[in-house]
Length: 257
Image (cartoon, rainbow, N blue to C red; front, side, top):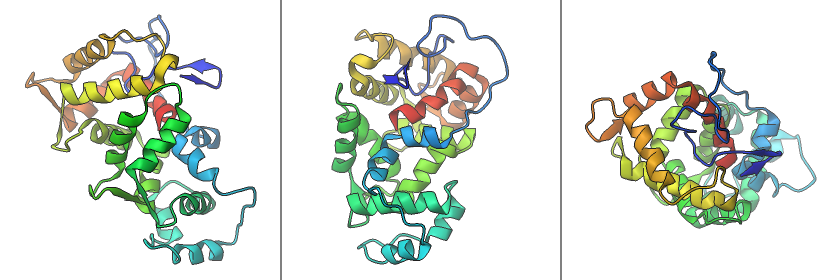
C-alpha cells in the first residue's frame, strides 16, 4: 500500500525473517521505541476518516450540544466524560467522532455491512470484504452483530494510542477468529490472506500465492513455544515483545484500521 509516499507491507506482524517491512536489509539492532501516534496518524485511520468526513465543515465546541445529541439516538452511549476517562481521546476528539458516527449511523449502532462499505471505499484496488468481516468481529465483543459507539472508540483508542500490551491483546483477539483463546495456523492464514487481498496490487513486495502460508509458518515456529499447534495469548505477547521486528511492525495497524 502507498501511504504518504512510502510503500508498506500488508502484514500486521511484519516480516518473520527479521527484515523491516518493505525492505531487503537487516534492521540494525537497537532499543525498540513505541511509535507515537500523532493527530496526523489518527487521521490516516480509515475508520476515523470515515466518520470525520461526515461532520461537515462546521465544528461546534459546545459540549452541551454533544451531550444533547447523545440522548437523541436509539442506542444512547455513555457520557463524553466517562468515555474520555476510558479512552485516550480528548473530549473535543470524542465530540467530533460522535458527531460523524451519529451522521453515518443514526441508530447509534454500526453493522458489518457498513464496515465492508468503509473498507471497499478506502481499498478499492483489492477485495476488503473478508478483512472487514474479521475486523468487525474484533470490535463486536458481545457478538450481537452490531457495534456501539462506546466499543467503537474504545477499540480505536487501543489501536491508535494504547500501550504495547493493549495493542498485542487486541491483535490476538483479531487473529483468534473463533474466540476460543487460541490462534491456529488456519486462523492466522485467513487473516493474512484477507489483508493481502485487501491491499491488492499495492502490497509490497509482490505476493506470490504461497507467500502468506510461508509467512504464517515462520511466525508459528517463533510463537508456538511448546509445539502444540496453537498459540496462546501468553506465547503471542511474549514472542512479540521479544522480537524487535514484530514490535516495529505494530505501527502498521494504522495502515489497515
